[in-house]
Each structure stands twice: as C-alpha cells, then as structure tokens.
Image (cartoon, rainbow, N blue to C red; front, side, top):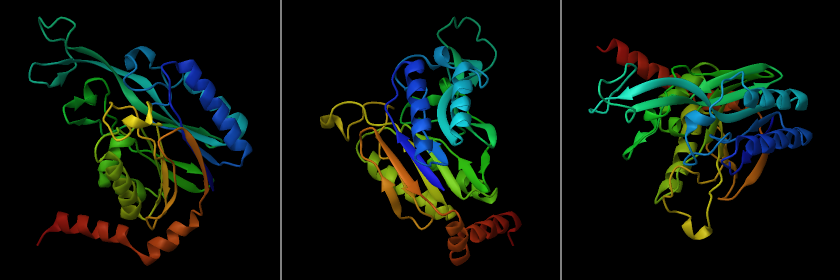
Length: 296
C-alpha cells in the first residue's frame, strides 16, 4: 500500500483549501497512492474565525467535491473538516446544557460543530467525529466542538484503517479498540500545538500508539505557520508539522519538518500480522481486561 501524507498550511478560505486538496489528491494518485491523508482542519484552520460559520454538512459542497476528487482519481482520501453539531448553553459552573439559561442572553450560547474526518474512495464514504476534545491547559474545545461517540474503521482493498484525530492520541484505549476491530493502519490527522516540549511529546505518543497496538501509524499534521524564530513557541492551535509514518515496531519510516511537505511511503500491511505473532501485546491487553472484570 502506498500512502501519501499531505502536510499543508490551511488558510482562512474554504474554497482555496478545497482547491489545494483536490490538486493533492489528483497528484498523489498519479504517483500511485492508495491512501492520501490530510491534516485535521484541512478545510479551515483553527484560530482563524468561527467554525460554526464555515461548517458544512456531510452532503454539502465541500464533502461532495472531495468525494468526487477521490472517485475520479481512484484513490482514498482522509480530510479534516467541520460539520454542524448542536446548540448548547454554558452554566456559570462551566457545565453545558441543551436548554437556554434564563437571563444569560447570548454570551453563553454556543453553536457547536463536529471536528470531522471525511474518508472517501472507491470503497465508499464514511466519517469520524473526534471523540476526545481538547479540554486541557485552560482551553475548552468542547465549548465549540461536540465530542463524537463512535469509533470508525474503513476497509481499503482488504486493509482495515482506524481513525483518530489529534488529542485522541493521548488515549491508548481508543487505539486498542480500533485494533480489536481489525485495524492495522492507524490514521491520525492533527493540528498539534507547538510549544516547549510539545515536539518531544508528539514523537513519543506517535511511537507509543504504534507499539501499543503493533500497527502502522500515519499522522498528517498542519505545517507550522510563522517564521522559524517562533519554532518551539506556543502560538496557539495552529500546527507543528512533523507528520510521520511509524512502523508496527516503532521505527519512524518517514518524518517531515515544520514546513509544508508531502511524504510518500510504501507499507506492507501483511507485516502487521508477523509482528503481532511475534509480539502478542493485543492478546495481553485482552487478558488484562478479563482480569479486571473477574477479580479473584
């Protein structure tokens, strides 16, 4: 299987990003890619405007155009986008509810979106709504992004792909569950935030999730905007680059830098079965779960 990883800088213009995405899909397919992976928020970048204003349904023009591009190219694409979700009201305690808060006005009203991965190709179209929203370090993604409730796998010519987005990577159970559903290639679009220690964390987590599940891990990140003198500094949720493909044994088969770049790597999905036979960590994980259920 040949995989193209597109590390791009999304701009605050959905149509311009769509034009780039369609071009990358066509070009990657011409170079033999079976799977083309784009970053989280490929449709529109974080910190560039209200997401509820640009969000589109899965049968809207953005998704339809991506589906057509993948179909015309004969390849499968994974693209980060935003879809409408719900309207919620935040209480003074910080809790969210779906009913209006009396006397609160509009200040505590949020039209939330789903942080969605669209996966589409010859095998059909699916979507994944990010489950783990980034509510950490004083940031509340859940105020504007509704968490998903469903894990998703997708078949590409007999190879099962498992989907995750950015902050999901901090939760090993998500990846164990995908592996139990047959996934051998974990796809992780991201807009990982730069900052002190963040690159080291990113490299550790991507290797760990591949090793945890003895799977390939394919992570496509937003390129780092700004000048090189800002690298390593926290400028918000805009991307750190460093897209990567990790083998089931933890080897980094390819890794980009901070700027926009395309990675093209051939993987052997059959290699996963060999690794899992030699290192049966998934079997051990199942045993741990059974022990936890039964006790003594």
